Image 1 (cartoon, rainbow, N blue to C red):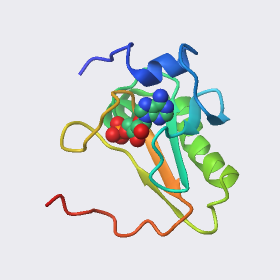
Image 2: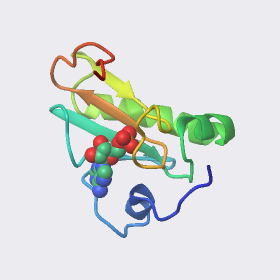
Image 3: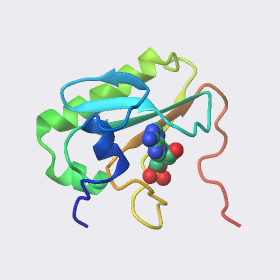
Length: 121
Ligand code: AMP
């Protein structure tokens, strides 16, 4: 799947639409999800054009990979969930219910999140 530079996160990265920024480094941006599903619900995205977690893992540079992972830690620290715990979610493709085709990780916490996978039926 080729990268769609008109996706909503690409527009956020270009500053065309605003976001509620939580953290930023050279390779990643983190902002609050517009439809939070927990008291803490932050999206962490790489600044490069990567469609999915596989795309990012397979093709990003070591510096981008490191910057992204360190951003996740910084967000957990900044949002105060390091001790209480949190969950990272990366949806990919149709079965994974990925809505925005720019790789992102959801960091959710601030309450008991419950079991990992909810039954769809
Ligand atoms: P996913 O299903 O993993 O692709 O999730 C996409 C997420 O992006 C959803 O949780 C949306 O609420 C969130 N989202 C969509 N548009 C925006 C936006 N403009 N700012 C912040 N979060 C957004």
